[in-house]
Length: 175
Image (cartoon, rainbow, N blue to C red):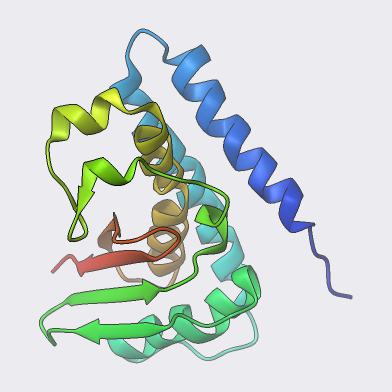
């Protein structure tokens, strides 16, 4: 039996997690909200990876595990595969999603974004929408890190918003 959750419920839950940690629990120390949100994503990714790989043999190398994340894992979560996977063959992978579903309903002030990077970090902090969008990416980064951790691959995951709703996740394998 396949158990699924409505996408709108997941989006609402993410919005509430970000809101709760940023405006409630860590209102006085917002820099502590991001690691907590990422930790929740880590637990979710770890458990989902356990569920999705229980009938599979262990992966033999990093590339095989990353391909699993890009194809099967991502398809189960977002009903589509990662659009592009790049690697430098030295432990860094870039997963590009040109239509990241969890960012499809968000917007960022276009005056702050030029050529895929934020012009002034202090301006980004002032723009609440841009900051909230960035905080929403800690959860999927945690999911990816948790899934790979469960597969025996310690890593660091960061995200970059190039042009909403496009998003890149950079995975750096820890040696």
